[in-house]
Amino acid sequence: MNASMTRAVIDLYAVAGNVTALRGITDRNARLMAVVKADAYGHGSVEISKTALANGADALGVARIEEGRVLRKAGILAPILVFGYIPKTDLHDLIEYDITATAYSVENARDMSEAATELGRNIRVHVKVDTGMGRLGYLPDAKQYPAERGERLDTIVDDIVSIDKMSGLCLEGIYTHFATADNSDKRFANEQFNLFKNLLSRLKKTGLEIPLKHAANSGAIIDMPETHLDMVRAGISIYGLYPSGDTDRRHISLLPAMTLKTGIIHLKKVPANFKVSYGCTYETQSPTVIATVPVGYADGYSRQLSNRGQMLVSGRRAPVVGRVCMDLTMLDVGHIPEVSLYDEVVVFGKQGDASLSVDEIADSLSTINYEIVTSVSERIHREYRGRRSEVGSQKQEVVT
Image 1: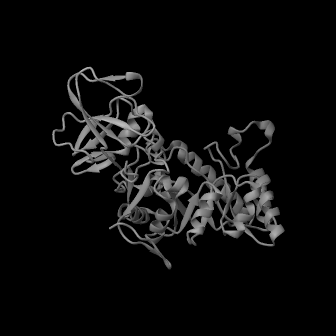
Image 2: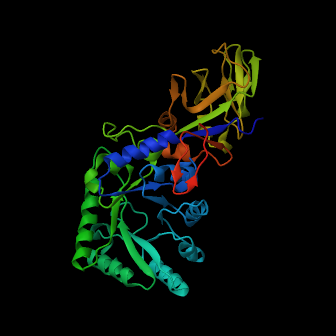
Image 3: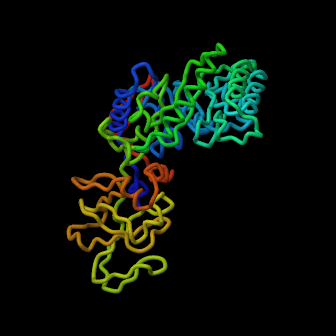
């Protein structure tokens, strides 16, 4: 089996074009953060970061400190914000690698202050406010909090002011995250934004002016320009995928960056009533040809696509037959007379004039496009095509 036969081909021209298009619809005074968490949604964080920064992005967003370390070790110098939790044992890395942290409680802010004071250095932080997402962050909406907890907007303001005064911390930003910006109904998103603006107004009255205020994710960048503030955070849109089917595509044209390809490693003619794969869940109705391809659920091709998925062979759709295995999947190619051993197979993407989109696969699995691309496993080789991007003195070789 050719180890590189199954590969994710990443089109850096598409990534560059998507970033440029997003920059074009973003408020001219707002910065653009490229969100490259989860290995850039499965596309490769180092390569995507360099391409995004070379084409209009100003900063990078990651979920975990180790993702930031990878980027710094690759020589990337742009600002990096960690959205999530950072263990106490890793707080010194914020200073060593010059990475910005999220403060979502007084307690975790104190931990960072202690680490910074111990080293005699400063840690840059952005405060996270939970205006309705229900994950991390201060919750300023009294209606959503039990009265006995005593959480009120003024208390949140006091806490943020106290963080600004903590030794070793530099309060650089404040942000929130929308739960429904990609819905056609924007009422809840607007409520979140109004609550965030109210908090910002109260903070300003205390004399605290935080330099970077940000709220807009991909859905809000595209559909809610009034939310762009000082910075926007583009995630799924960088990779050419829309946040949901409700996103207004008239505002921007995006190009999918990833094509997942494999190839036929075995062909066999089989008779009618031939059983295929584990459990014998598929039986041929007539004589046909079965093709085996080296991609399976360990590669991120969901087992739920057993007997229901499709792939592209010679520009035509070939159904998945039998259960998807850990490393292999079988296709019925009896209707494709020109099929040959080692022919290219497209799991998702384009092949000639034919296409099988990530969104179509996601819909068939009752999930979202995010899950499909981030599920492509690390053992799948990433192959980069497109321009040679240059960020400062950093050069990146790609296949042209």
